[in-house]
Image (cartoon, rainbow, N blue to C red):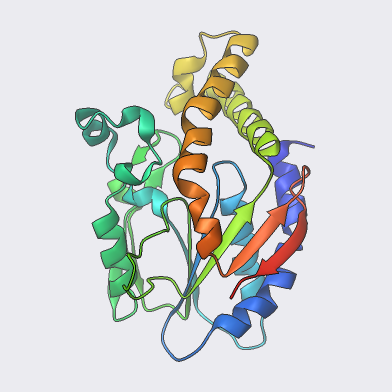
Length: 248
């Protein structure tokens, strides 16, 4: 079973323990905005999709939308001009003002959420979506620590996905190698540029990227969201949920 398949299998039961806690956190009318964050490769997208499916099974039918923070990354050309090309995913690499504005606007009416291509690894204007006051909005990704002290929260519930650093590295390398393999037949893929590497070189490069970029981002920035989260969902080595901790 591939790493992604294992993640999807384990995620099927992920929402059950979380749904009860989210019901406790929801209050008032209007869109209920749920943030899902955590380290690179922890499985935020898979978990969020499973969470959406679980919410859609609830007796009271609700209009549920899923969006990602990736669309609010600055375009690659802009990151390069700012000297941030090697720090994509760090807070400075996002248009945080636009992300905050979209999360505020969607509560009152239509709001545009930019799209991001996971083929070219760049912002893709054609993938932008307009969301109009959904009953529930799940926003997944990095950079969801958006509130300065004293500011109102822009998400109503924040879920932090947690795992051991060794497991995160293993998942990241497995994902990198899977995408590297697929890129052999897809010259448009971002990973095609690494096809000149041998498998051993590609794996070594993936581990270097993990340590030099993603692990540093985790320790310097991402992990601080854990203390601010309403729910901390702990994952084991096989991506299975091993604990759900409610905060506050």
